[in-house]
Image (cartoon, rainbow, N blue to C red; front, top):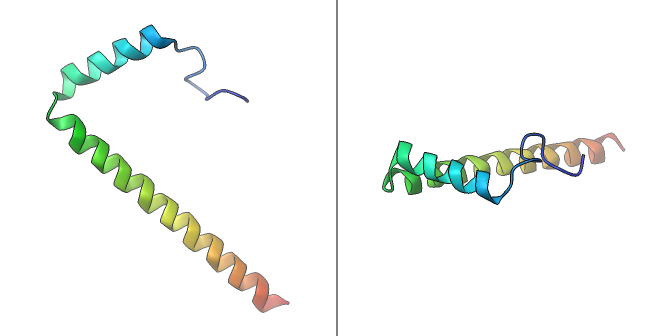
Amino acid sequence: MDQLLFLGNLGTGEIIIIAIIVLLLFGGKKIPELMKGIGKGVKNFKDGVKGLEDDIKIDDTDKK
C-alpha cells in the first residue's frame, strides 16, 4: 500500500490534463476560494482528531 488508492497510475501528463479541466470548469478566480475552503476543512479535521486524542489520553490517565 505504498501508493494512494486511485493516484497510483497517474503520470505528469494526466495530472496536467486534470488541472486544465478543473481550471476550465471553475475558472481562475474560483480556484483560490476552493483551495481556501479545503484548507479550512483539513484544519478543522486535524483539530478534531487532536481533540479526540487528548480526550483519550485524559481517559487513560483517569483509569490508572
